[in-house]
Every structure is written in structure tokens, then in C-alpha cells.
Length: 118
Image (cartoon, rainbow, N blue to C red):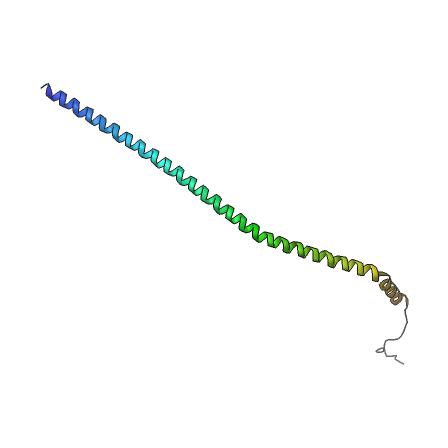
């Protein structure tokens, strides 16, 4: 009879060791999953940074040429505005004299379509 409690005791101990091993295995698995998740997140973040850098360089290249285009258009516009302003300054007096002459030189005359009824 003494061997039976001892056998039960051994079984209980074996069951306890097995439960500890399972718990340890679960902990290791959780650690591995957490580590794998962190590594994957780091890889994703690195990939995102690389793609962002690549996008920025391509955008800078495109915007750089567009920046030159913008500067050229701006410069051409300034030249045109300056040309218009200088033309306005040159022709101002002549145009004003012409307008005043037309306004002040009134020649009253009967319109050709007007019929005098007698």
C-alpha cells in the first residue's frame, strides 16, 4: 500500500513538472512572438523611412526643375510688367491729350437719320 501513495506522489510531481514545462514553453513562445513582432515593426519602419527618403528625393528632383521653371516664369512676368509700365509712362501724355481733345472738341451736328418734319 505504501507504494501506491508513492506512485500517486510521483504522478503528481510528473504532472506538475509537465505543467511547468508547458508554462515555460508558452512564455518562450510569447517572448518569441513579441520579439518577432518588434523586429517586423522595425523592418516596416525602416522600409517606410527608405521609401519616404526615396519619395523626397524624387519630389525634390521634380520640384527642383519646376522651381527653375517657376523662377523663369516669374522673371518673364516681371519683364512684361516693367515693359507695360514703361510704355504707359511714355504714352501717358499723348493719350491724355488725345482723350481731352476728343472730349473738349465737340462739333454739334444733326444725325444723318434725323428727319425734320415740316
